[in-house]
Length: 178
Ligand SMILES: Cc1cc2nc3c(=O)[nH]c(=O)nc-3n(C[C@H](O)[C@H](O)[C@H](O)COP(=O)(O)O)c2cc1C
Picture 1 (cartoon, protein in one colour):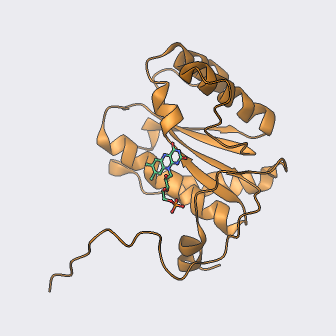
Picture 2 (cartoon, rainbow, N blue to C red):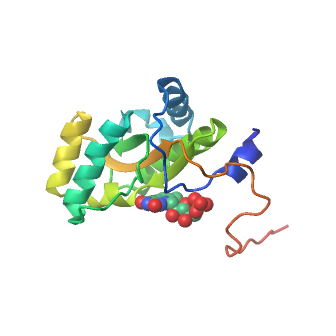
């Protein structure tokens, strides 16, 4: 797949299979995150945590369920792995933009590797300031000063990951100014 093909093939997957994600593929996905642009080169203000098995991801899901009070909630849809991006400056727009660049790179890399992927921010954001956030920090063994701000779920799926001819988005207006 070339870049445009991967962009056109990426789609949010919300039904992952039980097949585990190979460590080699996870490492390639993480490498893609490390190639992302980062505002003012503040690489030090970001941290990646890789929940690399269904069992590890299930621990995140359990915290999300605890946080929202719904024992059936599955914000990561049985993903085989979840890469959580944490930042030192969680209240700055740039930190979310940095996380977004890393996460999109990971989603595209997963697509290239024929893995489904999903940008998962809601469940991570919902834990901010809650007891579950403290438990998540402990689960991730997160270094002092970092706050989880977003994540990429990846895994095998039955979804067709072939390039689409048109984007879902036929709403956003575009102006060309000459
Ligand atoms: C910043 C951001 C946060 C998102 N958070 C979530 C989320 O928490 N849960 C979820 O299911 N999808 C989430 N998504 C995925 C969007 O819902 C999805 O990208 C959108 O519906 C378009 O569909 P597509 O990804 O298949 O093109 C998020 C996407 C972005 C860019």
